[in-house]
Length: 195
Image (cartoon, rainbow, N blue to C red; front, top):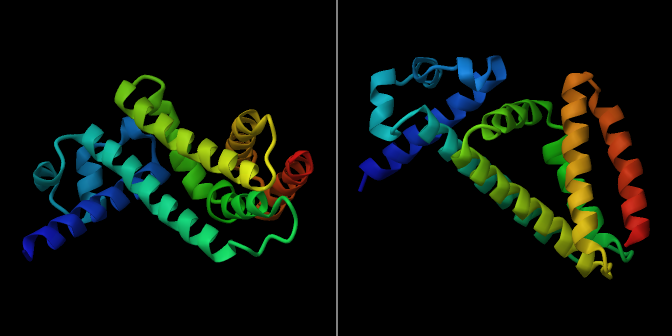
């Protein structure tokens, strides 16, 4: 029974090591040896925990999704009932995206790298689509709970696309967090008006 928690801990350490590696160089230039060095685990032992570099990446995507899904669920529970306007649920979703995802330049940089891999790797593409469907679904659900809109699905897609675009621009153009947040909030006010 003691081996499973150690195994899971090592797997998490390897996944976090991939995150740090992707902040330093592209996935295509990151070797299994780099991930091993970064995790402090002999790279030959990585195969005990994962089948390949791609397996590490696929598990990393799941790891990110699970982490942010937990954070999002907790955020929504904490903000439930606080929205005094019809856009309260939507505002809560936007606050989460602003605070945890879109203005996190490190996360944006890593996610951009995952996008590049997803263009040519069907398995990574499938994982990424799952995440985006969940993000779009969360925004659509919030729009509907806030009084809804007949265009909730379209607004949700546009909102997630805008957030992703601003996240990427913040990395490319080196926007500071204050400026990025201002851009997001101006757009979000318009969405809330539409709801």
